[in-house]
Length: 320
Image 1 (spheres, one colour):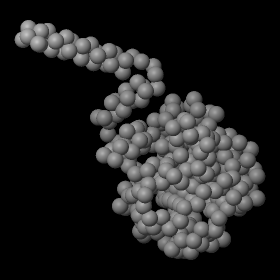
Image 2 (cartoon, rainbow, N blue to C red; image 1 turned 60 degrees about the horizontal axis):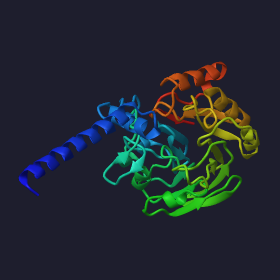
Image 3 (tube, rainbow, N blue to C red; image 1 turned 90 degrees about the vertical axis):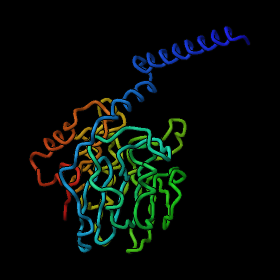
C-alpha cells in the first residue's frame, strides 16, 4: 500500500469511527429503549451523592431477651429475635444490579445504607424473598458476617455467592422448615404473596415468597414484595404476629406487582399484625411516585392508630 493510500485509509477509518460514535451518542441520548434509558440513568447518577442517614443502629448493644429490629434501607431489615440475629433481603452497598466483580452495574442508592457489612453482628439466619436484583444482591450476600443459615424462595439458591452457609433451604408456599443456627432453632414458613421471580426475564421458573418466622414463642411476618392479595387473611392462622414488614413503594406504575401503602396496611390488618413496618421505599428510584409519598400515605392510612406504625425513616430502631 502506498503512503497516499495509507493516509486515505486512515482518514476513512477515523471518519467511520467518528460517525459510529456520533450515532451511538445520538442513540444513547434519544432512544426510548430500555437499554438506552438504563445507561442514561446510570450516567446521570455518577455525580449524585447518596443522602446521609438520619439514624445509626447499634446492633452490638441490642439485648438478647427482647425483640429489636432496624430498617437498613429498601427491603433490608436487621432483627434480633430473642438472641437470634436475622437479616432479610440484604442490600448493603451503594448500587444494586449486575455484579462485575470490580463493581456493580445498576441503580445507585438515593440514601446510604444504615449499616455497612462490617458493622453488622454475626448473622444466624438470612431470608431471601426472590431473585430480583433489589432483593437478592450477591455482593451483600457474600459480605454477611458469620456463618448463617439461608432460607430462600424456590429456584433461587443457585444465585447464592460461594461462601460458607450453615445450611441452604428453599421453601415453596405453605412449606416450613425447622432451621438450626448457632443460637438455637427457628421455624420458618414460606407464605403466598403476589409478585414474580425472574431475574433476567427468561428464568420465569424462579419463585417468590414472603416468610413467617417463629422463635422463642414470638412470630414475625415478612411480606417480601407483593401486590394486593387476599392471601394475607389466610396467613392470620399462623399468627399472632408481633410485626408485619410490608412493602409500601414502587406502585406507580407497577401496581400489578407492588401494593399501595393503603393496601399494605389492609393486608397487615388482615394478617392480624400488631405493628406495621413499612419497607421498600426511600432507597432506589424504581418507580414514579415522589420520594416521601409512600410513607406519607402509610401514616395517613394509620392516622387513627399511629402507635402501630413502627418506624418512618431508614436506620430507626424499634424495641418491642
